[in-house]
Image (cartoon, rainbow, N blue to C red; front, side, top):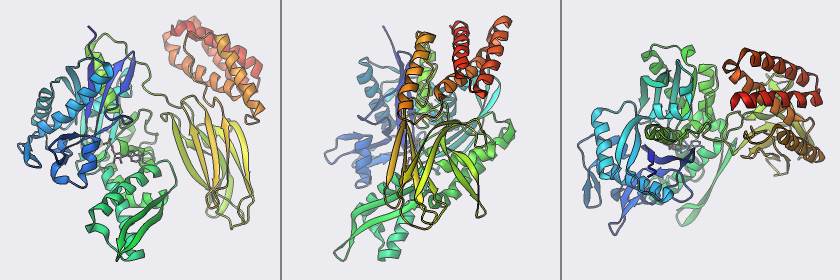
Length: 582
Ligand code: AMP
């Protein structure tokens, strides 16, 4: 009988369940359309048990019969009161586990009795024991309690390269943890951990809530803190604004009839820019970096000893966090696994490893292997400098992704802007590949610094859509670049079939006058060169020589723009790699 061991991330704010099925990690939906189960449990007015989203919804109005963040109480001999009932923390956690078990059973159409459940690396024995008991109460045998940072490292597949130190930066809704792990011969050892049990994305929400309250005080001289419905709305608006600012340079926070003053309705309409928001959250972000340095010190390591920085937890989508970590470690953090799902994914992988008879997937999620952006003039100390490449979508970002950045006109009454679309990694690299260009004409007659929002949307099929909008008038223009990414084809597809499809795509796109160069061929060649580098040490010396020679010729063909030669070389290298890799 086919048995599954599910992976569960029992989180403070949200919990997730995942399972390996048909060589793919599936994160399941405890509530239709949502992958995360809010870690809330409650009783409704009739005494019916509510778990997840419904419990979260009643929390703001009925906190007396709703409980959240039960993870913080695991292992304590306390009781939790829900209405007129009392429960142990284990019992509350068991309701969450049971819900996730039921979710898996409904999806797999199969009874589930075993799970790998993740716990923080700093959990004491009492906390771990309480988690096991919660499993028993939910009819789940917990076959392994896996440390959360270990689960994340597994999901990032870092176990394949030996002997290195990784830093796992986990910033969730209510807690921050940083762990340093040493990976050696497929074992993952946690060297140190540090954190703040009360610091999380909720603090970022609070900063925006205070910003809104301040605005209401200044504009209407009102303080809605005593009105629960108004505060519930403000809290919701703040969290949505925060998420929006991860992908957008501005957010407009709007709510009709937010509250009232002497019978007159008060509407909210307030803009917040990412720049202003980053000032608000700088202090908590810097606190996490101080913790990171303490964890490094405890592990007796230096910043330069860290080979990789892995991002975990929903709050790591905040751009300022990635930016500060990149500055500190002089390398961009890895973010290709969904930060709020990677712990559950790692737990599911561990479950499959314990189960032992299912091959593990080679890639967990679709990512973009390249960065995409535009060239724009750079201004320094009031002087316009040369045009430089500014990536908007960074390589290794999970797909689909939509991201917007703001650029400004440089002239008074500037009538048009050009948007040159490029693929490339390095702002100064002259070999970045141009994918197309378009202009937006008829801009408003206003002084310079007129904001233009440029949005890049890249879907899982590699279709890139670029839109430029004049912020003040809404004037906009969009172009689509089909197949901006040449995904690696599966091995059954023959080399010829591959090349044929590439050429068809090029013809189709050049008719749209978007593509300036046969960039697919170059992208394909770069992917092959990268793959050849990875496989080089595994092949015979004869094949090694052939591969290196072809890589050299390919590099030259790209430099000399000899695309016909390039396609022949690609074919030859593909053939060798096909046999080496199979
Ligand atoms: P987790 O505990 O890992 O589920 O993380 C939940 C936290 O991540 C909450 O505070 C969310 O508001 C936050 N979060 C989720 N998505 C984003 C986003 N796009 N930008 C910033 N914070 C986010």
